Amino acid sequence: DARVTQTPRHKVTEMGQEVTMRCQPILGHNTVFWYRQTMMQGLELLAYFRNRAPLDDSGMPKDRFSAEMPDATLATLKIQPSEPRDSAVYFCASGYRGYPYEQYFGPGTRLTVT
Amino acid sequence: AQTVTQSQPEMSVQEAETVTLSCTYDTSENNYYLFWYKQPPSRQMILVIRQEAYKQQNATENRFSVNFQKAAKSFSLKISDSQLGDTAMYFCAFERIRTGNTPLVFGKGTRLSVIA
Image (cartoon, rainbow over all chains, first blue to last red; front, side):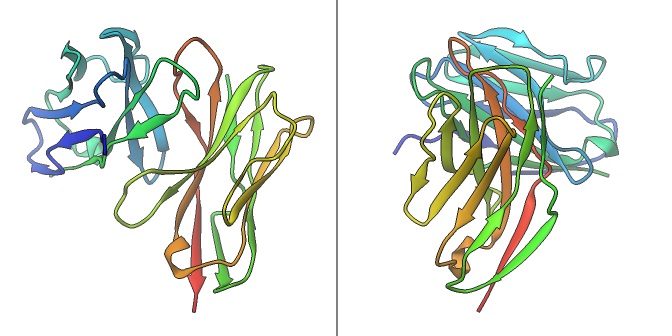
């Protein structure tokens, strides 16, 4: 049963620390998304990649967030320095290039910045 | 830009009854997908049902069905024979049709409680 995996599942850190979240998309999927879920904003797109190339990162605060795909099996989202307002659940999702264009979500990383 | 609106922040339904969750959206696109996702307390996002805008027939998946009104830009979810396991947040989502996946635009969600 192919699944998107994310690590860590939970992260508690102090303000100012670097946070790295990792995502392993489903093998063969060529599109990877990062979404953030907060009570106030709901689910919103941070960035996405196709064939490892970034297509849109307009949802990310550029001064502190960065997203990369070092290879086809790994996507990373980094926050440096972290702030309390970054506390949220971060989801990775991957998609296949063909119909029906469904996105498969990972279990999410719950980040708490104190 | 696309927007998705879910006007019911919370709903409740008795077990075995039927409930309908509302969703409206705004877009200038003619072809697109609409989805309902379920998010139980585990936080996992689970696809419930999908509708292609070019299909007139409403999608159904077992106890779940949609009422898709393209002209009205309305996409409601009906859950029949509600079960305790249906208790969750439900999100309506929109996706443009391009070559390959495009980002989902989500509504704010409806919290559904199924009462025994």
